[in-house]
Amino acid sequence: MKLKSIFGNTLKNEIRDLSENILNDQWKSRIESTEIDSAGIMDCEEIISEFLEQNEFGCAFEHLTYVISETETNLTSEQANRIKQLNKKLNS
Image 1 (cartoon, rainbow, N blue to C red):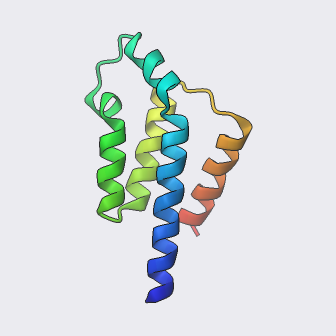
Image 2: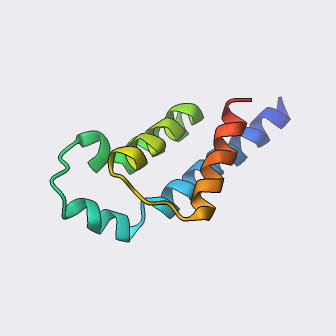
C-alpha cells in the first residue's frame, strides 16, 4: 500500500507540474484575448487541481488534454513527450 501511495503522489506531482508548465502566463494571456467562454477552459487550473486533490489522476489528465486540444495549444517537444509518458502510465 505504501508503494501505491508513493506512486500516486509522484503521478499527482507529474500532472500538476505539467499543467503548470503548459497553462502558464503566456497561455493565459492568449486565452484571455480570444472569444473562448467555456467555464471548463477558463477555470481549467482549478478543475485539474480539484481532480488531483481527489486522487482522480485520469480525470485531471483528461481535462488537461481536453484544454490543450480545445484551445489548439502548441506544445514543445518536451511537453508532448511528457504527455505521452503520462498517457502510458495511466493506461498501463
